[in-house]
Length: 420
Image 1 (spheres, one colour):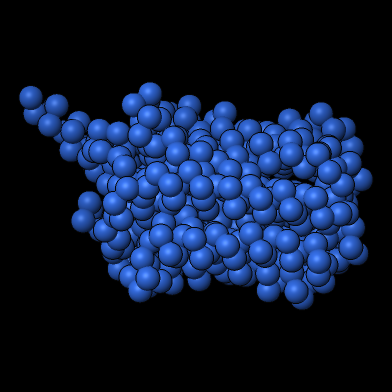
Image 2 (cartoon, one colour):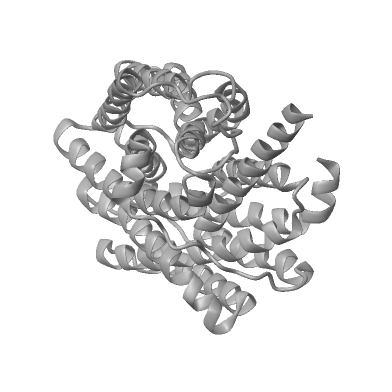
């Protein structure tokens, strides 16, 4: 791991700062939107708009890179992110925020594509898995760190928006000053949705569900905190605990997924997500109960995405994995667009606990579908399953393809050892 850090620390440092800036704006907008008098429906549309831009960016970024190159795309999109973060505070109007969120979602998606391309280029076959693990870990740490920085200024003013803008601007310095040669960038053409559903129904359906849950958690939990009367400090702890759960459970559950039927593990994790949502809905008046439930819920939902990707790879040919990765990103994005809208609608009619009602309902549906798939489809042979690779819902097709390549390499290596 030390050797990986030596080669990638400038990139990872830049990504850490980038995620801190993104984490600040994600939580801050929910709090500031409530303070500006935005309705639940308005703030849900604002949060959904980010994922509209993100999905569009993941499709258009490759064309931009081919036209002007990695460095120019990276610098241009980074500048737009910094400017957009300042404009939120200047124009606290729902309609303007919706447009700004589309822009910032598009820009972050393109930035991730370029950063992940460079990160993959610095890794060898021997270090690719560790590099990807560090990348996912750095992203989660960045979001948790952002919640601490939310307490350095008043949410009603400009300071926190300026801080997020500065962090994003500074994040590009270590990356652009140390990046070497420009990597070749080519993504596979995504397979059709129908083919993916036919080959791995649980993987396809679960990816949509997790996109919807992740977007609702990330986009609406701060607004939920305001609605139940939490202070800014308490909201930052709540959001931080949600992602800390993802850090704590990511690798233990990944290790377990290589040793049991992944469908069973998906069912159990989704079931614990239901129980955690129920505990939060019933015990939200006690902050410690709420924080404990959020920790478990985040600990189940964040790693679950990686396990669904691994499960999908268990049922498709190695040659199809790169094209499947592109379609999984699309399905995740489609779910993410709808997540904040649905949870906003439920909170409008059920009150703040509509947030947990939504999370619990989606996880319950995933639990039931997992049980159904175990009943109708036999467990794949251990020779056909691939190793777990950590991945996050907000990563671009580049990271998904890297994860697939690493899983295939590990599978081929294990097969070679068995033959020996």
